[in-house]
Length: 585
Image (cartoon, rainbow, N blue to C red; front, side, top):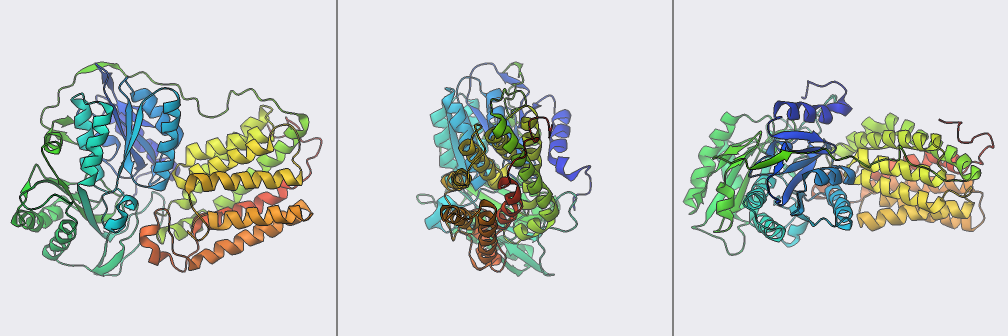
């Protein structure tokens, strides 16, 4: 259990601050993460690793010559926001382009993708390399859906070494994708991890059992089995990884091997396991090239282990063995050829200094929009623990906390925008941008994008009519479906969202009073959310653990139905004349 913390919600930020202070000779904290202390003397590709906190030494511990130029750091097990990725990239970029590299998780894909679009629009060359090494999370026929776990490390190492020697962006990306295509990982968990401040782990196992096929976000194994001896476990891991030998590779190959501890499995235990793993790999005809045994990609305090193999060739091996100097990993003698100290980039997130233009009517409705966000905040705080428990069944258990972080930021941003004279559209857009920036993860980016779309539709000119309100909800739903690519039946928030939007549009089209229409649509959304208990998830982190989620409603659908329910009385109210710009400052 994680015992050293102040406010649990500040744990990741405080840990990053402490890390950057300890290793100030190599790294510097910037908005959104950390970068190398010194810029390169000549332009080079900036390799930026990223993801949630809780995996140290991934990701910030790998910043330094021969490895990453920076790390984009989200909250615990939560993807960083697009703003965080953009901010770190702007600081680290030195004129040769940027490559974001991260595990294949929906929130990361969305947020790094949006940051990439923004950088591209500014003329910065940018690419993304996803890691998909977890053989337990999808069959070979669906390798593109696999999660990234400890395979992050060799893929990042290859890319960092290629960039350090001066390779162009296209070559760094090609080599990273090649390393990913030749990397396989299998893991096993003995006990779940516990969030700071939580009273229990994200999952438990029966006495004498282990979970085979773990994730690194606190997800349990894909199936439980009796805890074997070290020899039996080594045989299991090796046989499963070698069964997925990449096409064209085979006996006689040279391989990079990582035996990785997940957080509380001791080095001595790993060495015992290595005593089985290494001979089995050698007897299969492989030459082990500079193997690593230790904690390289962790999951807070999870007890567990994973085995990663990367099949090397004449291109990849020199990059795997190349020198590196980072706070957590050092190999050989990496020369520091550095330019000036990195200069901090100013963040342009938020609307704190924005000049708003709106009619008095729209400002009066903006008061109700801010009140709707406040109501959502109160409801989500009350439900945080319950939503977390639901999410931990087949996910990483952070949904409740992520929603609270997002709605707290949204409420503060809505209040600030209203106090500066914003109309309804700008209040909702400010709330959405803050939600996406502070919540991170899949739900964060979707809620943020949806609220912004709602605000863009409502506008700042008038109190929305019933038809306008329905159009705003439809825009909210359309933006989320466009981004998340989910459909009804995938067991996501969309399963509650589309029934709500459809019912509201139909009822208002039939002439039903807006308040009554919203209330009925909210009941439909709640019923649809409850019905997701009978579905198998086809999207997101819960997909690999689909069977475990049967009988539990989707937390994203549940929270959406709950939030829309409490927002209704505010969105459908008639604004009072006195609720003008100063009333909620």
